[in-house]
Image (tube, rainbow, N blue to C red; front, side, top):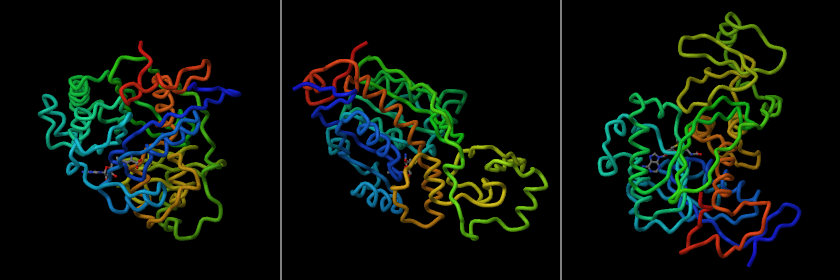
Length: 341
Ligand SMILES: C[S@@+](CC[C@H](N)C(=O)[O-])C[C@H]1O[C@@H](n2cnc3c(N)ncnc32)[C@H](O)[C@@H]1O
């Protein structure tokens, strides 16, 4: 059995199994499915976990299966074998992680739940996502502990802050991604060279009145910022200053309703928020505006995750377009093998 290449397209019959932890509305799953499609690789989700009922509903509607609930209640041994672990873990336990000394000490944090699954199942690769703040937290101690714990588990891990703006999305969203491999291998962070989509491709036309801010708020905005010719998103910072950009500042789950206003006058619609994270219009919206706003604010920039996963596939030797490769050599002992460095 060979990977066959026709006009740059790879055909093969391997299935890459992944688990989707802290799944939210499935940003990571969306990204790996897109990457799989791009390289003509079959990807299969063997476990998803998400505690929030509203997210679970959205996930079921869009991916055809309801995630299991609380990860802390899932025994690591019961997690199916998988090649890739994906997790956009919540930032809530930072303060706890900051004082950790190692794996055992991580008990009681949600990062520990990732670590215990890595320890029990030893997937070939993991990709984790978190807020940029993680890197500077506790003077760099927190990320140092996390990387140390991953290393103790036998992983060769590296992290990088990437901005959605550099991957085609008109959203300034900086996130830290951590990628780890069970064995040393060739892995490159994706290049930042995708031109930003113009806001006009994101914004909806004929937006209903209910999205418009009150006269009072609009006047207040106009007292601090002049209208712009091209569409802009007006951002109010903590000090109350207003800036207008041809892109959105980071969507945030818990921000005030007037934190981001299109042209200083209206809120983003549910569809616009999902577009700003890279979800296509085929992604079904089934929750209230408030829930979708929270979910999209918590989700990840899909094209960034996709670009990373594509490079993970390349590191695993299953996405080369320039030579033929024996399919059976991609799987060793039932798991994806790596291209060794
Ligand atoms: C930062 S969000 C990740 C969102 C996801 N990457 C996406 O694309 O939508 C973290 C998610 O973890 C979920 N979560 C928090 N505690 C959890 C737990 N104990 N078990 C499972 N999910 C949990 C939250 O409900 C939230 O949706």
